[in-house]
Image (tube, rainbow, N blue to C red; front, side, top):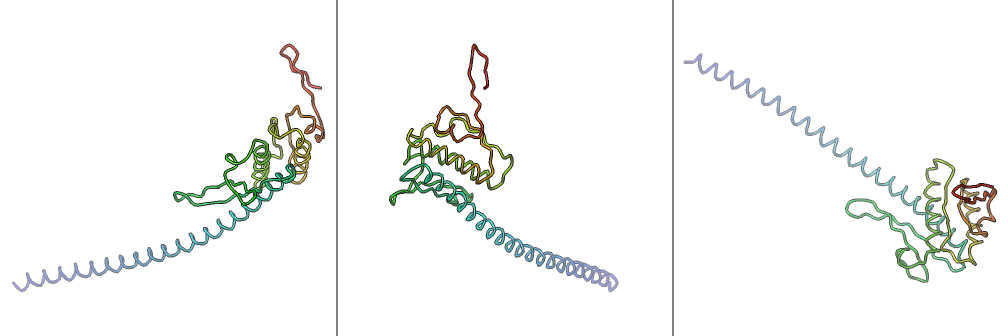
Length: 197
C-alpha cells in the first residue's frame, strides 16, 4: 500500500513539475507577446507621424501648384485646397475651392473653365510627386475656358511644363494655346486619310 501511494505521489509531483514548467513557458510567451504588442504600438505611432507629415507636404505642394495655375489664368481666381481626412477608418482626399469666404466642392461651385485648369494642375502636381514618364498628353485642355483667357491658359501650360520639366503633347485647335507650343503639327483628314504637316 505504501508503494502504491509513493507511486501516486511521484506521479503527482511529476505532473506538478510539468505544469509548473508549462506555466513558466506560458508566462514567458505572454511577456514576449506583451512586449511585441508594445513595440507594434510604437511602430504604428511612428508610421502615423510619418504619414501625417507626408500628407501635409502633399497637401501643401498640390494646393500651391493648383492655386498658382488658377491665379495664372483667372483675374479673380478660386484658391484650391487639398485636405486629407479620415472616413470609415480610411484616408480620403477632399478637393476644395475657396473664394470670398465661401468654400465647397469644385464641381458644385465653379464653372468648367476653373475645373479645366484645376484638373490639369492636379495631374501635373500629382505627377511631380513621383515622376514616371516626363510626358503628359492633353486632349483639348482649356476648352471650357472663355476665349479672352485662352492666352493666359496657354502661358500657364508653358510655365508648368518648364517648371516641372514635363513635356506636354497638346491636341488643340485654339490658336491662343497653340501659340505657346515649341513645335506644331497640323493634321488634316482628307478622304479618311490623316495628313500631318
